[in-house]
Image (cartoon, rainbow, N blue to C red; front, top):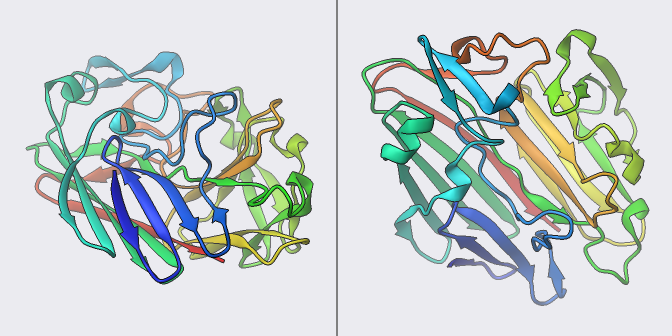
Length: 292
């Protein structure tokens, strides 16, 4: 386990999956990150790579071959190498091996950097295509946050999601685990969205951000504490809590990719939301979480 420290927070990251597992404010006695109770969801904040969401039949085709991969890809299942580490920064690396290439036939170098400054954690993804062919892929974050942050400071329904810019957003509905972008909805977020477990009765709320800088804040009417996640260039963000379980957490998920469409052809290069990197080129993306 790798630890980062500021005057305010202690952050812990597991080498397995380079997964953020704890952000703790000892003075305020607050743990911000969901603690992976398997009754609800046995993860904290997995990295989604090289897909976001689910493939139809857990498979895809690429240049005439069929490959199999389960939901959210495989990065979360592998141990990353620690390239650099001090009190405020840690860099993790995952290189393709034969097992990975059986699911995703590319040479790649995935690096994830965590940088802690005061109350803010920056999470940066850096993907290098080491192959001699164009690499299609997706990547995303999936941090879960305790709601409520303290059991004596209200309950789930005392929290709200506030999105800036305050406007109406295109919402991509889900049919089962797949997106139905052809029947896009509109979600009015000019005012805060009060949390209720029934909000998630069709799984995640997926907002089309159109690469516009966006901040999604979780805050409470009975507490001064919360989190605000800012992403500058993501096409999508998912807001999720398990349903019908009444789970005491909410995930805010910046995505550079999306689950398969209901009408997908299965061709990975034509997949909705897919990113591409030319040979020996790089892709970078990041987001920041402010804890208050």
